[in-house]
Length: 327
Image 1: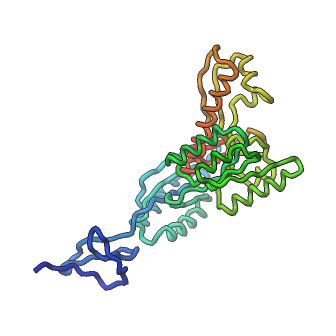
Image 2: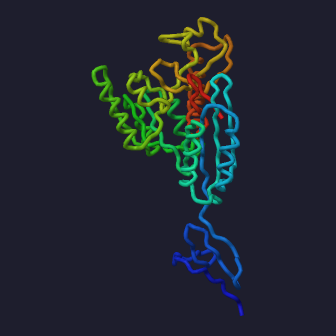
Image 3: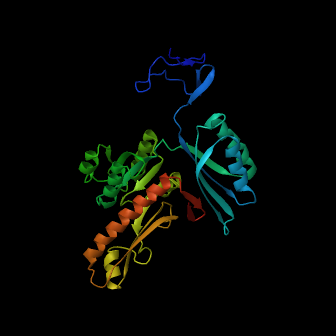
């Protein structure tokens, strides 16, 4: 006669698994027993978590952080770090699985807070299952917007785009084709403060943690730059500050420039001088006309911005004074 498995006494779901014909168990580990012996362990699905941290550099940081994770059963699958000899700051990024944790992620976070006090460390833990929410801003040029939407739709950009704001209505059709809310917020010198407050309110309501200026042709106020410190990314041609003002590509053509570039950076009150995240370049030659240079510039801008957004949302960018560390 076949021996039927039995469950240890515990509160269980009454639903049955169609493919295995067994009862589904609670989130915590339960034991399936046959003839008084363990047959298998059924656990909740494993999740990956991201831990990022920075602190003043000193002896033993790696040992203390990795030792704490080991002692609590965190299974580390990725680990990158960098110690800056100039600023004497240490930066770390770790990915770990939670299925072997002794007491859950919340308990690990409590223990990390204790260690953070000892190391003067700032840290953040988040589940990689939760995609970062971002808001895009655009005016009329849509090449950067197109790149971001395409990469998001294909899954190459692991974010949730919660909306697009614009001071014009030109890109509405494109954005709504993707099923993303489009917010037309016209702006004048007199209404700038109210319009920027509307952007902040939309970000708060949608829980967006990043504003991406995808060729948004408005200069943000110092107040908005301050409120979005480290949470807003902009793109511009790398000719700044060498070719300021109107028609930078025409100026570059007149000077015989042989490189087209673009820079993605964090927004600060100093126009186009925020900490650099990504720079892209393309080689050109004497045959390029200004209109050709504009098209190449659009390509480099779109690539640089999408790369910068991905790095930021993957938790790989760390502020380091006026610079960034990418790990």
